[in-house]
Image (tube, rainbow, N blue to C red; front, side, top):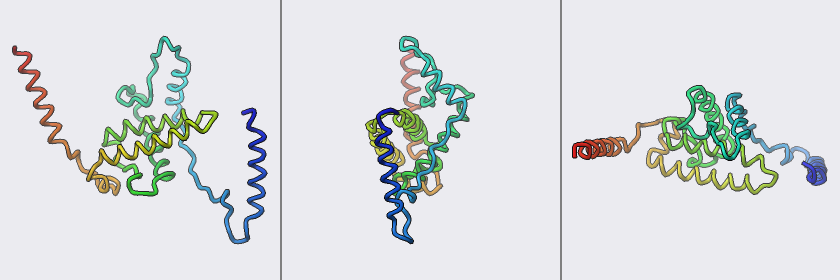
Length: 191
């Protein structure tokens, strides 16, 4: 990180000055910041990401761990556990309002699980940036994730966030769609 050392030194010096200037009985703002550590990636997921980095542009073939629909069986448990840790981290770091709480039943909501994977891996990539542009964009993506989650949960959002998950409210509509789709296929195949 050449080029930033002077700025970092200046920041350290400013922080020291602030710390010594804190009145007795008050906590320094710098010391009061309580951001939990980002969850460590499981070894298998690290290997998948390294495989992606070593791919050639003309031969992309590696497993994308953010594509939950195509995860190999051996990656499902470690990715799922890591996403659980990420959901906890997001709740501890960002959930100040009810609509920003990721419900504990998120694995039972495919729309949340699929979106959470993209948000989690997107954060990994954005914070590797040398500037703040990508992390700032990630925060925009996070707000969009919360919006999509609230829309998809609909009226059941508060129940799910309180740990009272109910089966998919649109299950009847989906069953009807699947039934009609099967009927349509059967009709077309008999022609």
